[in-house]
Image 1 (tube, one colour):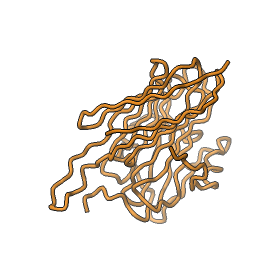
Image 2 (cartoon, chains in turn green, brown):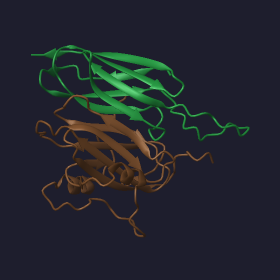
Image 3 (cartoon, rainbow over the protein chains, first blue to last red):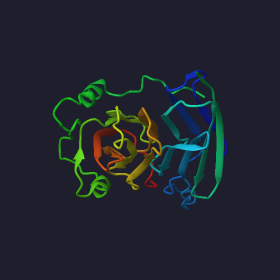
Length: 107
Length: 156
């Protein structure tokens, strides 16, 4: 579980809603696949994703194996102050990761 | 990061049907020829509670070439009265081994409630989305989708 890429608009006005996209590189292993010699590859999917905007949680996702590999999430946030979005996620194996993106709000 | 193309293959007819909130509360999906499939996990979640079928939009392709990556968009148009904001949206699958595909939570009231993601679908089936509002009311939307190449989630 390594990279994630976050996309926020470069120009945001206070009070506007802006689109946020995050793409997390993660295999989202379903647990149903077998290795070549027939062993089950254990399930390991991201089970929780949180997004905080200047410390306040604005979005949370509980994915399952039904979310495609390299999960992509898009949602909308209402702009208040400049600052940052911090995403954190954890998978079934207990691996945690996070990524952050600056948010620049005018007005 | 590559932008998701805005021209996702959503049926414009379905979008028009779903957007017709002023219309009678018909279930805006294309019923399959044989039966009216039930999404068990959706029924279990709703239980005996009343569910409204207008307003919530579930946008998913009519036909998916690749069941491993199927784009889905769920939107709840506002405006939202205080006390009636969206708290969560559940997405259920009729046939996947794990029927609850995802839950989206909105800890803060948002002006625009719209989420997009990509799901895996184990074959042609129905998906159901349910929005839970702060006052406990429920809104749902369903869509039938034909999957030509299923996600390999049964190990075969």
